[in-house]
Amino acid sequence: MKLILMGTNAFVVPVFDELTNKHDIVAVFTRAPKPMGRKHILTPSPVHVWAEQKKLPLYTSIKEFDSVSEKPDMIIVISYGVILRDNVLNRAHCINIHPSSLPKYRGPSPIRTAILNGDKTMDVCLMKVVAELDTGDVYMRKTLTIDENDTNETVEHKVSGTAIEMLNEYLKNPDAFPSVPQSGVPTFTHKFTGDDEIIDWKKSAQQIHNQVRALGCGRTKINGIDVKILETKIENGELRILKIQPSGKNPMDWKSFVNGLHGMEIRYGE
Image (cartoon, rainbow, N blue to C red; front, top):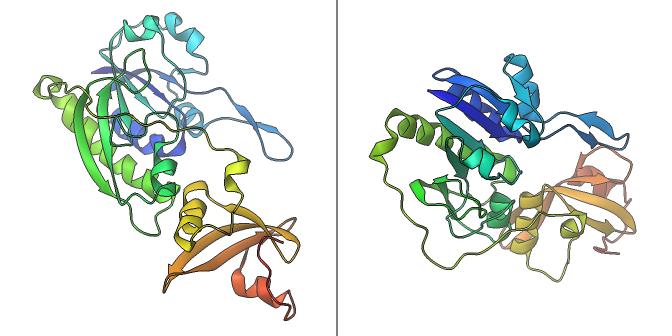
């Protein structure tokens, strides 16, 4: 089958890699390189790097879509982050892997939102892409467990494996999977910012643990020191900090940080 692939994030790479083994890839679309880090170095997306390594036809702007001369049998979209217009949607059947129990968690951050909310399970949906974001009919659903200490990264890894299984099954015989309209009240996600990482110590231990594992860190002050809390766990109902990064320093374990306080009483949020 001739495919156009559209994606950006790292967890998409294993899925696309699997598809290249079984199908003819007409083109790969990904987001343009972005400035990253303190030095704002222009950095290509993981899908960009992968496509170049595979020597696949690569495009970094959806405005270039009409320049793809070869007609695909199908367009597959996973975590691309670009709104698709009629010129794309009318070119070929367009499907998407969306990691949420649709219509729950439409939008850009379904995995992080599920973890932040303390969800224990989530669906991975294979769905039709339509003009309105994440509203298309669903062809297949598979449920994943979100474990207590799962992070965005570990859940993305689970989604990759499940997406490979779903796409392999679907692409063998698309007609075997009837489309099912979404039902229920939709909920929506948003893009998280640095402000979402700020810890409110009035929240429960579980809520703070969810915040750290969903967003990759929680920012706060401890004894007047700006820190990022990088890893936590819940033990006997209490929050335990496992890894922390003081401003301007490398990440360290909690014991090393406490030793650096030289016996001072620990004050959170000050």
